[in-house]
Length: 575
Image (cartoon, rainbow, N blue to C red; front, side, top):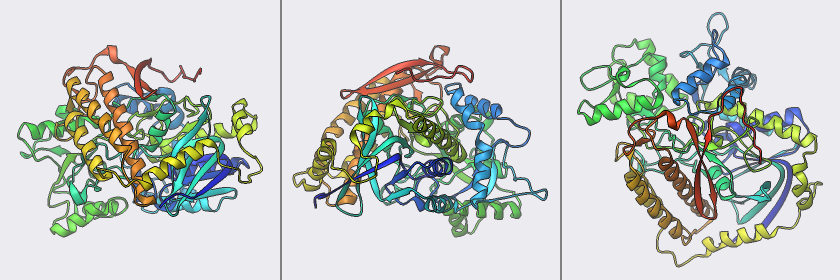
């Protein structure tokens, strides 16, 4: 098979990724302007992104009696100070209005007798959210001048003079490639899963906390073009129900379940209650022989048990099925817990593009929202949508004032919307696609190299096997082995367009692995137990109250540092 069809499309705004942030950005753009939009999604927007299976709560909401600044302080404390307060505050201001917009679209919110949203903890509200993604997708489909390209995998930006003018990708359905030219581009892809060996091996390796199809594509594309990245060392390791990898917050917040060891002792307060400390405590209890560890649900009422079953059906039905198969519900047995492998995800930690308050990256005209936008952790669903709204508003504003950064688009594209001839950049990319599709002399399969990558990261860069610990010597070994795998990945083969997608997912993950290794090495302290457990530097230090940032240049990842940014001292790009 070879790619023999090239399609050139023109639009005002290109959105890469049709998840929650991508869909909400499209809604904002069309409701507040007349600009045309193309959404490129490698799956199908009806069930793509982190919300594909649904969700049972909105975990970022300003409940009655709290303020946006309270949310900023919570996220800042959880990340031990390494956050962008300006980004957190501008996001937090919009959380509630975004939630109300979701209700307008048909999302079911649980309400009390007085008609108020039912809170689950101090920052969350309960929903029946199994259909949250279809609702967003249906709203997008009703919009005029919005073209949705499902099953189109974007692999590269088109950047000239540090300005984005479009992107290139291919269809997974047929032998065609796309060059999409745009005045502004929003990256709304997911974070990176599958870098490390997962909890469940073999056939069940896809059963993980974060979507296995989120491969760090947005990060990798930005890195290749020299975009500045931040805080990849703040990995996210989820504390989850064992085997099913279902969320534990539903138990901890929904019924007040405490973390207990095999002896029944509550250990969570011993280690701390931040997200990373909850994982660390579980690791230590097991290492010291007091495992397995559980969330204590024995003794809850039957009504609470039924509520839990319904809640998990909204987002992780495997946990409900496990209770049913065992013949014992949560009221009769505690739920065993474990930490997952590490992920890079800006929706929970601060990893991602270095952006200004408008969510524009250091590449002119390229914006980031949701899991790929760095500096703003604990954004979850509503926060990702809030960032998408912020980015959309600024793109509209820039286009309306005929931003001088549109000159490259003027030169390259026909604003009438008619198709144009493919660029040299496109032709070169298609040659690369066809080289993988026509390769008959490969030695290693994509899957073999992916497993090797996961083993390297697991053993030498702080995975489950090493209890999330690493040192500089191990990171050095990891770097060399990942570079070797990157070379080998240039000679893999794809039998069809679906396998071609796997080729680029492997290459994306390997590049992100390189960034993770460099960032872990760059922070000479242990600020977040388990998330970044550096045995060479086991303590944290005030000297490291700063951001670890990076830029990929000429095949080398350069690490540098930036001072912290407070709420009032808003950072804006000067390049």
